[in-house]
Amino acid sequence: MGFMNLFKHFLGNDWGVHPADHKHPAAAAPTRKLPIPPRLHLMLSQHVGAPSRPVVLVGQKVKKGELIAAAHGNISAPLHASTSGTISAIGEITAPHTSGLPGMAISIDSDGEDAWLDSEPVADPFALSPEEIANRVAAAGVVGLGGATFPSSVKLNLGRRSKIDTLIMNGSECEPYLSCDDRLMRDRAADIVTGIRLMLISTGAQVAKVGIEDNKPEAIAAMQEAAARFDKVSIVPVPARYPMGSDRQLIVELTGREVPSDARAADVGVIVHNVGTAYAVQQAVCLGRPLVSRLMTLNGGAAAMPGNYEVPLGTLISDLVAFTGGLKTSAAKLVMGGPMMGTVLPHLRVPVIKGTSGILLLDAGEAAELEPEACIRCGSCVKACPMGLLPLEMSARIRNDDMDAAVDLGLSDCIACGCCAYVCPSHIPLVQYFYHAKGELSARQRTQLRTEATKKLATQRQERLEREAREKAEAAAKRKAERAAQQAAAAAAAQATTTATVDTVKQGESA
Image 1: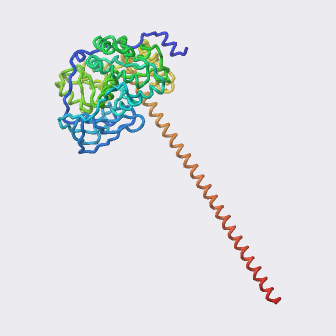
Image 2 (image 1 turned 120 degrees about the vertical axis):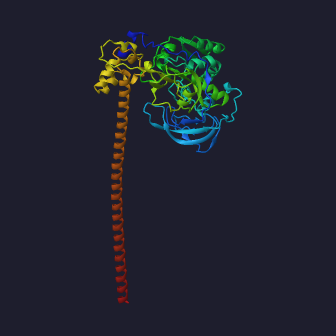
Image 3 (image 1 turned 180 degrees about the vertical axis):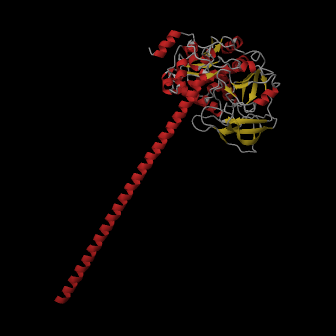
């Protein structure tokens, strides 16, 4: 048993943290649909992999659900118009990222009709082949809606290649404040179960297990009722503990299988999808509707009307906040996603993307940050780490710029969940050290790759120059040999001519 496994064995199941969930009143409020804003901005890069490429022109009329940007490369996803209207711009806007840097987007001015592109529903979706299901999911631009945004069709196809036996559906939603998955399971359980059944066909898995934290009794009841007729789909309540929504923790909880640090879930016969993704799959396969909107949570002490809203992709957060009554107090921090692993945004004028599970408008009390103090070596971070790592030791190595030692201690296994920083009595921003270290290692790797590429190009250039010099020398030698041969032939011909002339003269004298 390796050190990490021994360490996990010693810790048992006492990992993670139990932060106040702050899910109410948003979770209790009925789901509402946001009216179509006058202008939408659809980012070309809102999924893992290569950005999609525009296939429309400025001034072009489009229908809701019409393809406006095609997938580019093996890992990519297409983009569709989230309302009907006119393409008004293709250019840069502020991306939903902490940096505030711009990204490319397609802007659509709504015509107010919200008219769908004609599509043909499938008469019997369960008669489709696994490949046809995956192709329809790919064409619809469906990505993981739990936050990872990995193109879903790639994972569906991977399931068949890797001999998956268990499909795990993540309905845990362990991040505080967020409740969009909870509401989706309560309100659209039957559609989610249909999507799960289609995903079973596409992945080739034998059973599906839906993990839902036990602090969501209404969602558990709704999903159990919807799945009651289907033996292959089981609803499994799991303990409410952060980060239960992490793939590896959920896999252990539901199957008892541990994914090695250098392996993928598929390597142990499991594949994980979000319940929101299952709903998007049902819409894509059964109704032919691409991913153009999503359910998301608006919450936080500064939110005037917390709740869950069906929002068209490309909606500016400022439009969502305005629709919900604005701010009831000044927002000290704006977060996309949950407070533990979410992204701090620079301002409200950034668009909703496929991975936007929530927008948190945190007031001064919620966003307060205490000054860090010296580590007291209490080991709280070690006990809380769901991956069985040693955060205090890794951070010490990182502070000393010893990245290799941090990697040896398991830095690559860190899922950046923030449990260590949450429980630290000295308020040390441990997870920020790990983000920094991973960014530094990534930069070093890019530098190394550039260096290797430059070295390879230099080697290729040297080989080319040597080859060209060799070819020139061989060509020169060949030309020299040809000239020598020509000269020899000319001399022989001249000799032959002289000999013939002499013989003629001699014959004349004899006569």
